[in-house]
Length: 151
Image 1 (tube, rainbow, N blue to C red):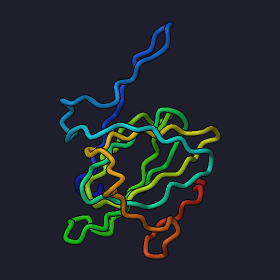
Image 2 (spheres, rainbow, N blue to C red):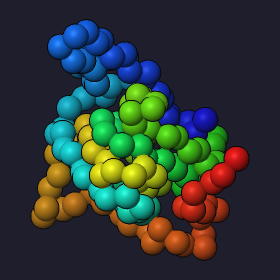
Image 3 (spheres, one colour):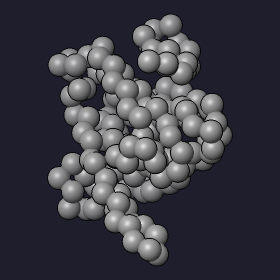
């Protein structure tokens, strides 16, 4: 696993009324702090390509649909520099993935319905100075294929 990446397994409590899934608590050991929370909706097959941050840690979860989230360590000096991880997050795998500062990441809706990704970044978005550094999703410098994999 890429250095600094952590996973929180989510627990859903269900009864005849419905269900409740707690996502993040301020006393979670892996949680650094609250900046903001947002939801991103993407249609089936949409790729939200590569980006990284210099100031914020992201905490990704998906509450509807299924997404795949690849991570690529581009941090020079990192013990896992050049390592690639891939996570499937959503209704079939309820987890939160902690994405450290400097780790390249994105996601793709691999389901058949719109997906709802929720992120809890540690810094609020600043439109005057966005902490968002993008790389094209099909960059030849990144050893990753966004196509569906059939095992």
